Length: 323
Image 1 (cartoon, rainbow, N blue to C red):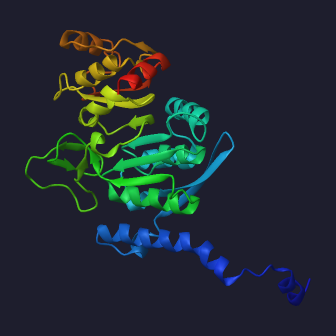
Image 2 (image 1 turned 180 degrees about the horizontal axis):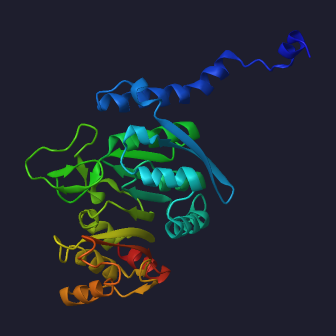
Image 3 (image 1 turned 90 degrees about the vertical axis):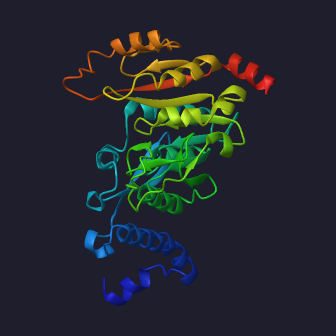
């Protein structure tokens, strides 16, 4: 085949179509440049800064944009796992997909809350299934990658990115991964925001699914949603408990009391059983003893567990009728 015939076989791309197809890449490069600039670097110093993987769950596919490890965005092990395996945390992913495939774009509440979204793995899955999402994180770098994914997948009408931490208190510090009460040292770096919002102030419709994973700050998140849990709680919840052995005592007790009062049934992923939620200090202390096989204080300074919670339908109907 000569050059002339080869050129004749190439389909010309209209100028307007080419501009539309290149727009996501231009936006991605712009965001990558902004990310590098927050660390005082030029984009060529860290490379383009992105990698991407096509993810498919039950015939719903989307492209997820992830940071290169050279960009130093919080959570590199998580990003590597998604890139290498196409999944993150098997049980949590399966729980979310079971909910999204049943409800998103079909029946019941359509709003998903992703509190501690990082680069938006669960936000994007929910959007791919047809749900609306509110994604919360204070790490502006991580959120820029989520925004790139939103642009490339045309999810702008489904995912609302909230550049904020979720908390019942306003004076807080954040290093890009961990949140704590503000000590007055102003130690939060430039690539994060310490702006905080309460869920009760920003959620104005029924919630299908709430994912809360904020590395030990979960009690403050739940405390910001007391009205929601009293009037119309989410139908499904996934949350992580990170219990720092040397610092905390009963901070998560209020979380379990809220869930018990609303009528949730929760499964512990570590203990691998349905979980009887403690409602007293004594019951909470007894619960922690069950984790002794993984929480040896001579070897680690924290315990972690993950909980999948379901609100039985009779309780949902009863609570909704009271609101």
